[in-house]
View (tube, rainbow, N blue to C red):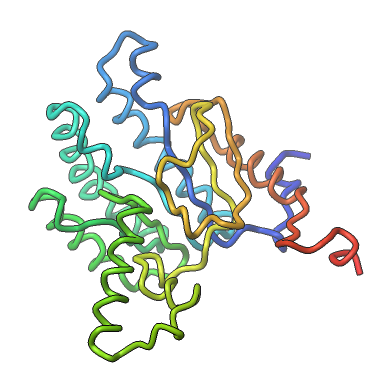
Length: 247
């Protein structure tokens, strides 16, 4: 029996989030420029997106570009933005064919105008697709999202729209850029690094974390299935005891 066949469809995580790490190291290991790794990583994005849609995942969030990534060399940043625009344009027919909606979280205003335009166009074209949401985290960080949420909550409180005692975790959820989708049940990070890197800090409070040594360009469908199978064999207690769950 293959790994895919071992996956229980009734325990499928509804939302998987992935930190796609290792493109640069993969390229350097082959004596190539870092951008070659990012270009190859796009193929992995396509493979994993299609695999997730095929097995019934409803939301796939990919950490594509963090607010901290703006500090990388200007040439690499420019190449990444151009690659993003080119990929969205080329993959639009594939998104439509597979009934996948493209969504976005992050600071839209930080992105180059050309990128903003292509992102808006692709989201508009795919907005009625229903099979799966592919969510790109671009110019995103969890701290940025929490700050903007707090600013909006503060403004609404000062305006008399909110009372301080009404502020709770549910209300904070509603002000985050991720408010429209469920929290991830599974968060995967490639490349062997074991940290969260400012990604969905609020939302992954009870997510299962899965770390793999595989660099992102080498991450395959089988690796995805292994992560999901591992997830399905964990006991998720949410603060309860094993005895409470079994009863």
